[in-house]
Structure formats: structure tokens, C-alpha cells
Length: 158
Image 1: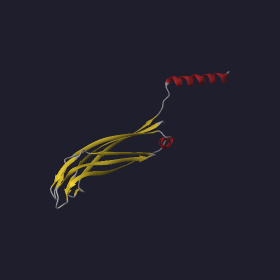
Image 2: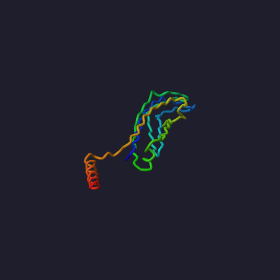
Image 3: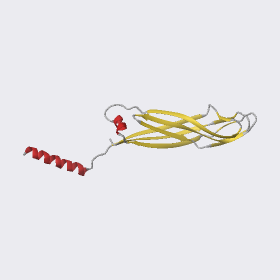
Image 4: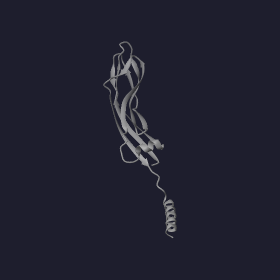
């Protein structure tokens, strides 16, 4: 084995609820949501941040608004070739890959005291692919090795 490739792709969907908790000032701004997906195990670590499109809002004092459904998708690929990591995946057995995810929101606010509500809805999906890379000798190399082995075998039989 000469390498391992870990591909992660994912998507996120979010409806964010924004509230201006100020009783004095209006507020406005933009917000995005997202998810961070992390895979680790067997010496591999890969992190993917997926962010939604942004949602602009304008709120009166004490006002609340829910965003439209915001979506986003992204992917990342990593290749590992060090022997210490490759050895974790050789032979018979199991190497555990741990998957964890956490959501986040990013709020850029002007005025008021705006916050993202705890009842915002964020969901995500992900696909993982682990590919093992091997070097296979070309036919010419195999033929030359075969001819060399035959000549050694013939010398021993004489």
C-alpha cells in the first residue's frame, strides 16, 4: 500500500431564528449557519466546515424573524503516505474512524442586542470515502523478473 485517501463531502440546511432582545434599538445585519464535520482514527484527521448562504435581516426592538431555508455544501480530500499511518490500515483487523459534528452560527449585527435563538434548525448529511492506493508493477517489469527467475532456476538444475 502506498497511500490512503480520505474524502469527505457534505451538505447543510438551516433555518435560523434571530431575535433583537433590545428594548431600545432596532438592529440589522447578516447571519449564516453551518456545521463542522471531523473524522479521525488510525492516525488520520480531517475537518470539513460547511457554511450556508447568508441571510440579511432588519429587526425592530424586541422583534424576531426566521430566515428562509439556507443551504450549503462542500468537500475536502486528504492523502496520507507515511508508513506509520499506512501500517494502521494493513492486514486483517479493524481501524475505527470516529465521526463527530457540531453546528455553528455566524452573526454580524448592527444596533440592538441581537442573538440567534436556541430553536434554530440546522441539519447536515455527509459521505465518507476511504481509498487505498497500491502500486502494481507494469507487465514489462514482471516479465523481466520472470526471465531472471527462470535463468536462476536453470543454473541450479545444471
